[in-house]
Image (tube, rainbow, N blue to C red):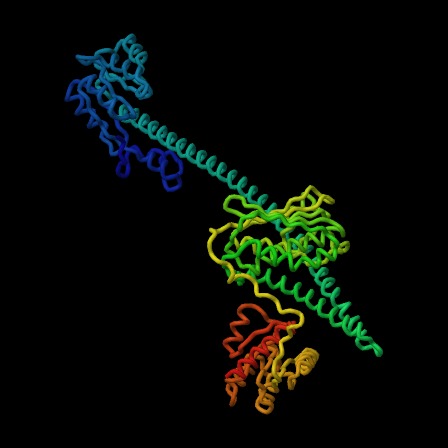
Length: 589
């Protein structure tokens, strides 16, 4: 194969011809310009071969001698040659015959051939030589300078061809790489365009979701203000009636009932909001036990029955004869069906019909609540369980509610391992809500899970008189609670910050302390800790009375030393029962 020569020789012809030096050329071209080219010298006389090797001795050449045509053919098959110096007269194969074979072979057809001869000097022989593919025809004895010059030309031509081939290969590689880069760039552009389009679509979808969420938020805030003002209006009217002189016994009984009902309505609104928040934060834990589905439904019906009767609806309940058992939080599950029944009552015009049907469906209980109400549009069926979603528009809404009842219902059902779906034939065709709940095996006695019987109307709790300290920075809250306790027969003192609570406890020596948590100077937690450290502090009943009702708030109250945690607004019956229990325990000890 060609080898890289040492400095000098035929390889320096390009520079001597005035072309740019090797340092200005690509590496492949510089290498090709300095190739040590192969030259095949064929002669059957060893002396002639020796002479030719001497004449053509050059660092840029690699001379390959051959003593016959066959040796020459073997060499031509093994290597590439820049020029073939060939004797015409050889015993086994003439130079003309060898030249003919060389030209017939595709790989060697372009090798230039220089014939040397001492015998075939006539014109016909010269013509025969050129006809067999020779590029020159020299007579022996050969002029050494002429032979070297001719060989140098062909050697340089070979180098130039090799350089051109390498340049073409490099160019082809560069073109291929450029096409590959263009293809890759095109793919990247398409990918970028696709990603930009997808991102744009996602942004548009996100913007639309944000707009819808913002719209629902605005509607919710407007509805919340409306729903909170609704109970405030009758409460304020009732207060004004009580202020009037000459109010009769009927009005005195009517006004407190009005205020109590509206406070309960506001409490339910706030409780629903807090329940949804707790579920979202994973802070609601179900108190699961074995319970009959019938017991749960009866609790829900009992709670919703006044609203159903008030609207004049016909209500029917269909239950299978068999007992269906669930692993459930009875209170939370009753809340679910109460929400569904209340929704059916509110969104059905007066005199409608509500059906609650239960059936056993494999391993599940299937509960269906059907009404003849205003119905749901097909496109709204999927969104009825979305927070703040309601069928009616905000301004035309006359049914009440914040639009969170169905959200709470769905999440509580899912926490029980069940599902709820909404169905409707459209506006004016009523609605159907289908609840599926997993059943458990029959067998356990559920009497322990049955709800406790409520107190009869005349079974008022009577508690001995106690000294009670009320601490709340809201003057009206403190004053009304103190008045209520005094009417119950207790001795009450009220203060309005944490420091006053600590000081008053030491002087007043109360048996029961009702502390608001969010007070100035000392908060309820700090005041409780200091009161516990006073003489007799361990025996006092400490009760937190606050609007904070999260599970973490209850734990904080316990850590501060409170015995009980009551959430505002207080249920007077629950408070009276708590006081009676404390008094009875004190007397028993």
